[in-house]
Image 1 (cartoon, rainbow, N blue to C red):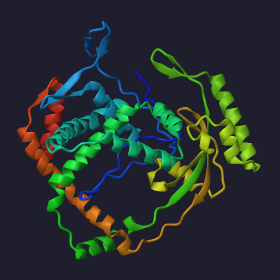
Image 2: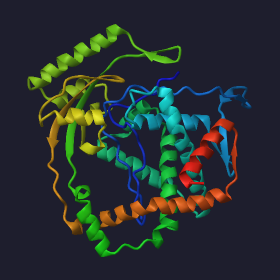
Image 3: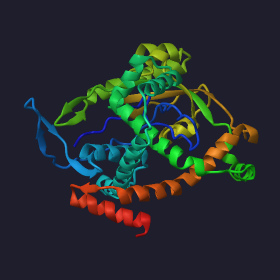
Image 4: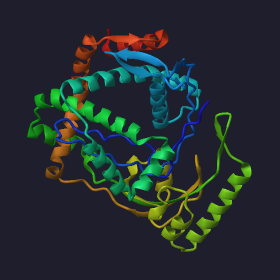
Length: 379
């Protein structure tokens, strides 16, 4: 069993922000703020055949399905399961295996649909350029006060390579491009529809509850034994003692910026632990609870996270207010479009599925996929 790495300090997940249908360019993604993680998720992969390479080494991989000749593999499914489990609130009444089994059919449908949409994007000549990817990276660095080295550390902690990140961005960009091209032109939204939506959904158009944080991480050294990350109790005790001492200095009035720059093991060390401002709603549920217990200027108790012990300080926090209608008209239009995009995308997918050659290499997964598709389509 392989323990899934979790980036605590900067990017719990890097994913392309959803661009509304009709927008000319996609939003460039922001990096998620520090998160107090759930317990590490372990997804046991099934046995896979060894494929020899010309150099005599072996690459272990397992093809699950071909969609018009393009493959979806076991490692890709495992990553989807990991990402989905990270985003879920754990169910204490169910085992990890039961929860994974429950989400897998939807993930299989999602994987096939994503391949179909990406293929359609290529048919339409939609491309994601190196310049667009670099612009996304530059935006991430600017929003989070990172230099190139800091971004690389964040990606390394999350276990994501630049190429994997680029693939994620490209996939979402191509899918959104198909939706804009094939569905967007047919949508017309009146001013009256926009006003009614604004009145009925005022809570969506409040200024965000935003917070600026500082965080400090003292890592607990780990080593790999039998494929698992383990640590010594003495190292954990030493890390807890160190962070308790640092917190005492901070509570006594010492400068957080200086202490974080000197002692923190986080990717935010160079910026003195500064994170934000960020929307409170974008924080993990655990970190939201922690932040909501603190007044500006207060410092949290140490929290045990995957890499060690972490403390947070709330620097500033804003008060939400309703934004004027004229200011949010574009957002309202996009929200209405996004409400309608699901059914329209499903119509397009039904056509693409009917035309596709889908070849399953695993009968069990094919049965899960077909059963879920029958539920989705009602057939």
